[in-house]
Length: 624
Image 1 (cartoon, rainbow, N blue to C red):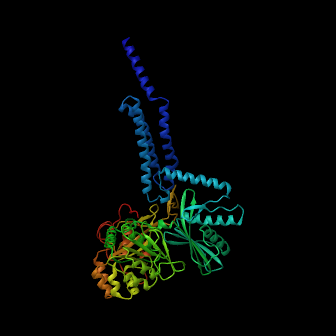
Image 2 (image 1 turned 90 degrees about the horizontal axis):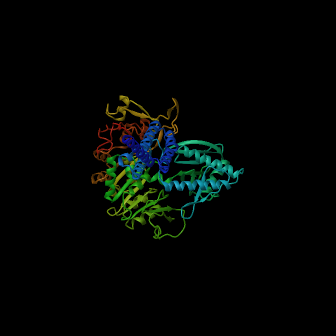
């Protein structure tokens, strides 16, 4: 009987413990935590991994293990903590930690993967989600009263905010057909990853053509009759609040295009062209030119050289590149190395491309009318960061008037005439740093161009303290690039020591999907994705300036070589060796007219070292 009583007591105790564990509200709370996690994993993460060819199977297995682990820990942690209600809540906390860690792990790893474009990176931001929900709700409400359109277009108001919706026309009208065609053009360019598209006459049969700029390369699109093109161009001009009737004068306006949850700010430019009018749309212009020095694609020793040049804070530094070579980005990056809140930092530009916090931007407009300060200076009541338009006069006059006010740093974005160079050379270089940006193919040409414009070699030389030249090349798509062993002849032509590079890469464009070759979904079949910069950066000391003053450019070349800094071609070859770009792209970007000169051998020091670019590829290309 005592034994029977003991068994009954044990059963009652287990029953009581079980009752505590399986109270009806406890499984409900566990489900409230588990179900949202499962929805995110199955609805968002799984589709995201499939879309960008991430290791979907491995991630799903990892998610299942994390979910099972969380549930098991939630149930059994009470056995470790104690037999009480508090044990349940401790188990629930452990479950939440495991599930959140699983979600965060995928987000961090996927966002760092080169195959995931910036706009498709995962953001766990509730404020952003709420904002997106409001946008979707507003779009649905607008669709009920308007004809069905694919895009929501907003025009900037007086404060530069995109609050004015460009209303859709009524269905089955000519205006609606024009909008549909204009939207289709924008969507096609956006899907092609274009940085801008342009509509203009092609010079035959009264036809207009559409072209896109993708990774710095122009791609031709459809052609259309002039009448159809005029209607589409007028649509975009009207959306950007430009004068539709003026088809000759240059006009610039801004608008925002919303495609679902994505927003694209566009700079619309209209100008007269031979045979008609040309309209271009540049996507997200500020994002294109605002970049930190450390993220521009420079080698580590070049970054160090640039920061030393900026720290000197006196004299003239030339920032040059071929057309569309990224010199505006470099100019802005150099200006941002100076603290605009303790220094007077200004720019002089024909067309400001972005607003830099704390920096006063002076826009020169020879056609503008209105009062000035008398000597071409901008109005004194313009706040830093806001563009000040200076009417009339000459560009050099505006430069002179700003330099006379003893600023600490001035970025001059153009060299339109020799007089501008003369004004810069005459400035007080002990108290002012001037960054002068203009077009040049290489550093040596940049120095010679500046000296010729100044007209006095010694005066020009005394002012120079540095020169930067750069170009842009296309990055290989890491999702479809194809590796191959380089031949000895190829390595010899590149100036790379034999045996130092075991593998190079070339563009692919296709991937295997269910054992069938298809166009790469990341790059669209082009084989390249994005651009990277190659640079040559030199500070100029007294010896260098003496060579310039006497016109001894051979001596200057020798002196620059002694600095043990890489040339444009060396940096480009290094990026090919690192798998960032292809040899074909290196040749396209660096080959100039005339006989090719083999580059000097590349040192074995790493790309992030202090000597010269590496010839051996790392495990993974560095992001820029």
